[in-house]
Image (cartoon, rainbow, N blue to C red):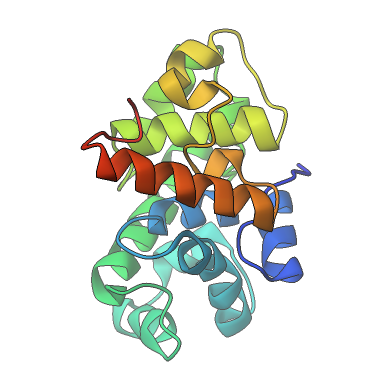
Length: 191
């Protein structure tokens, strides 16, 4: 897996997102109620603190010790306690349903519809997060199973509306401008 996502402003953190499937899943999980850069930098922060991003080890970690790794300043999220639990739940799901192989979440899917079902089964992944993640796979990692565009919905288009459209600082600025205009018009990212 080698992608072109450039969101964090930190080359090493972006490299991790583009090469480690679990890092990408965790980054997307954290992408809510905080700036995108902060959310997607979270996996690198965790790896630095834990020394790994092993789904089985994270799932089996003592919840209090894992919470400490998530909440030590700078915290991985504005709500480190709830996100620590979600990350452990995500890792447990990867262990239980994908034999510890985070990439299997998408590589094991027959098509876009099954990919959407697999992503929706992940703790913390709702409908919109699922669509955006499918768009990330297609646009930033060139992973495009049959029917991916339908499964990604509006995030499959060329409008700079989400993290899936970010490959550098200029694209990040374009996404922010577009989101601000949508909000001013009373519209959502999907409109």
